[in-house]
Length: 150
Image 1 (cartoon, rainbow, N blue to C red):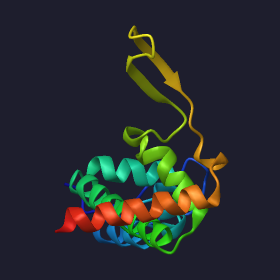
Image 2 (cartoon, rainbow, N blue to C red; image 1 turned 180 degrees about the horizontal axis):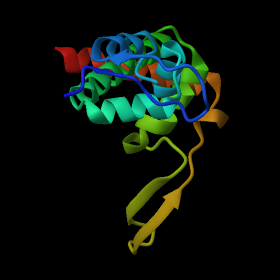
Image 3 (tube, helix red, strand yellow; image 1 turned 180 degrees about the vertical axis):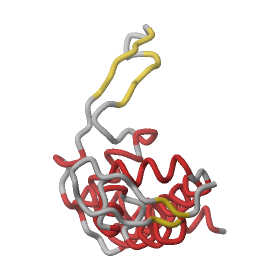
């Protein structure tokens, strides 16, 4: 594995030496975002991609950092829902609660009023739900979370 490299600059810029540690530090500083890591290091984005490809252990480092960033984002989402931030509740319901009938499309199957089997797709848009309906949803979700924790 290459520990140090002098990237060649296609744009005629100055050449900088990268190390596994310097790239790791950059990725940690910017949450694994490659363009931001390149800016942090003062090199072109393609240089960082090339260096990571030459040092496969950095692929695992990047994946771990991205997972940590996702965990932090999920934590913020949960906090926002618990704080009653209705835009976040709507967004979450739209994307994560389709199994409960929320989201832009929900499939409905079963016997109709006349007993005949029906299959249809219903559209439910949380952005059009009233604040009261979303508050009830939030309360039900928190109750379910408490029951699940027991």
